[in-house]
Length: 163
Length: 116
Image 1 (tube, rainbow over the protein chains, first blue to last red):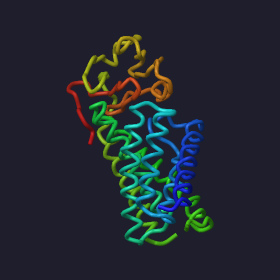
Image 2 (cartoon, helix red, strand yellow):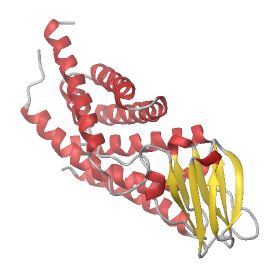
Image 3 (cartoon, rainbow over the protein chains, first blue to last red):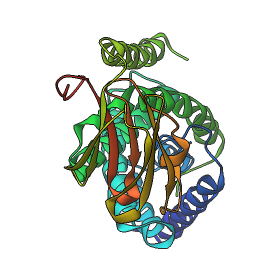
């Protein structure tokens, strides 16, 4: 791995972590656990398109673990890990088919992140009733996915990502 | 945006809508609330019995009034459970993830377990 790539990925992790922190400071008006904007996903979408799936997956996982240690708890880290993993798999698969634009890939990522989180929460609390939140979480995932997708598409278009 | 994008996003919204409608169907004013901690039922309180209840050794304070239930106080940092407001229809749930505590509304006669 070239030095320039290592530093680029390190910067990406730093950016994703800052975005996680910024996101945690934005108050959410709907008080359902798990609703958020998904700002760090801009970085992941960008890496997925410009650098590669492996790199994007690594940055995503490292970011979740570091943010969990810094600002969260072990529990919130578990939720985020499941969400991030499911979301990433969905996005990588969809990107590979090449049928959809960046926005649709990001929307899928947003929805799957929320689905992964709520499923983990169901297992952790052993309460299937939490699925009650699923429709709202899916819709919130679609909305934030569109916003993040538009921003991500702009970055993919304008920022050079080759080494 | 391509046409396929619209289909995908529309499809996801449709799934959410169908899930929502399925859950709403058959939802009616409930008879009691079930309090679970870590999946274990620790209490079942009738929505008729007005009062304030301390749950889970005092981590959350539940209020029941006029057939509705809500959390008055919680010791968790985000207080999302308090902000989730009042519940009274079957299947509705208040969650306090930090305390792994949930409050669910069930039917009057028998427990309607999962609405899905």
